[in-house]
Length: 197
Image (cartoon, rainbow, N blue to C red; front, side):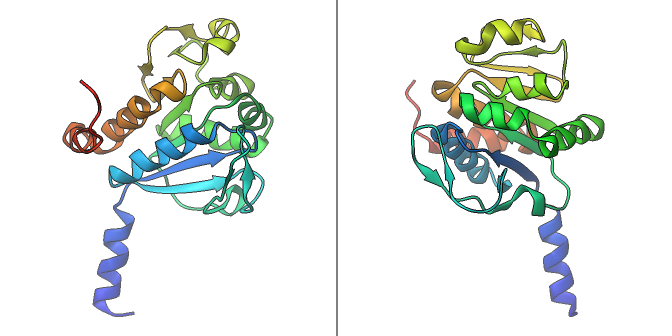
């Protein structure tokens, strides 16, 4: 292996990575927006299919193609992100592979993001109990019994970042970029989005 190749590997390994897990029935717009914003922020996003690398039928009947199967994912990450959607959240909550990754994320101090109904997966896997969190109004009563429900678009409590739904997905993505890459990079990404003022 040449010196140049070693340098390339070293540079590659310093790029922050985020794992976004896609389950059947997920809210596709949330998944796409979050992946898009994380990648704009310079984060290496691994878009992993819960049940393999085949196209995933999402909640609005669109099919998204994961980069890789979750079972094949290796390496270290700075963040794990769970898109919402009622059925997607249910599947994330019933997956032991997701539970194992969430428990490791807690232990390792990773940022964990969950949007819309996805905080239900946190409840199912018994992580972040009692933390401040938000969610889609349709699951708020269940989340209120598990965590400290805060009615805000995006809520941060330690490692945990949660958000309410599709309308808050851009803000959620920007918050994750800020947490992983810093304020300057998040502000640069936000400027490029031409958000209304």
